Length: 76
Image 1 (cartoon, rainbow, N blue to C red):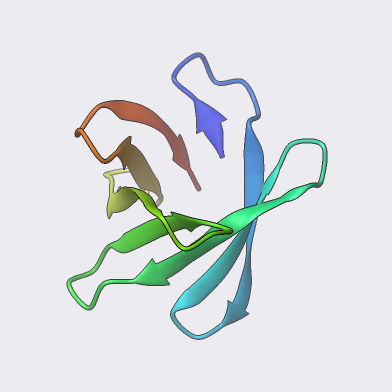
Image 2: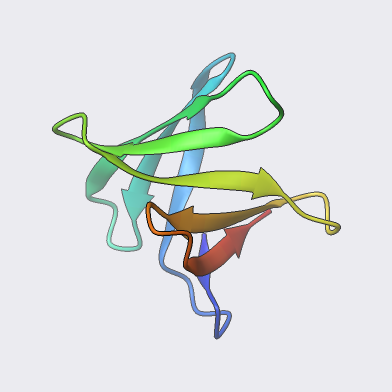
């Protein structure tokens, strides 16, 4: 996962079909990402709070946005 300047912010790994675990760049577990059934994903923190969403981009990856719709970066 990269910010808009292309700097590494974290990573996500598949836990099972439709679910990824997200980690900060230092390896600390940050939350989880769940498929939304419409080709994208919803992102949650460890307390279960919805913190954003991911939608596919033209680079075969995903752009992520916070709950207010502000673009935060991307992941491939």
